[in-house]
Image 1 (cartoon, rainbow, N blue to C red):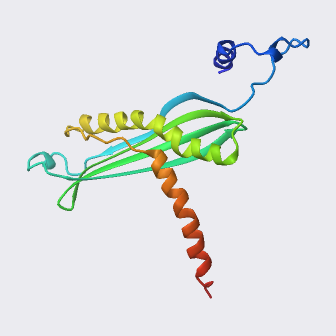
Image 2: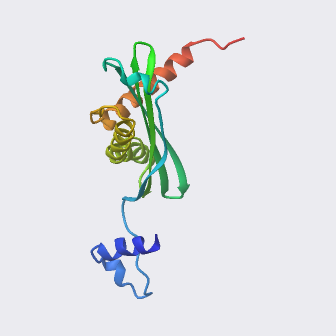
Length: 180
């Protein structure tokens, strides 16, 4: 990873501070964002009714859920995990369940707390989503089911909605009497 950081430094335009007499390059100014790595952290596929599920008419009800988790690895380095779960049911019987935990390691330096929260909650999942969608689709197709076309997700809008709900939820919690 040190080599990667060297590449980032050499690709930046020289600054007046870089020629300082102490011989050391100055620390980068302003916010910095970089993707270090993308990987599948976990994946699973279940088809509990196979092979009987292939005998009938294929008209499933598809449900799609997603979530994100963030963990700080070091000062400016974070792991973001996007979880996508797709379930297909025929009547009330599960045809398949596919789940992928698509993760990425991101460097986020020089950001204030609100900006950092927005980057980790919206920007990083937006980067991870196409990889997670591809991994889920591959699991489903390898299970001998037709592909599921997961539509793009607007993580910026989801983040904005969650921020709007927070004050409302806090106000609702403040209005309720304490349990005895």
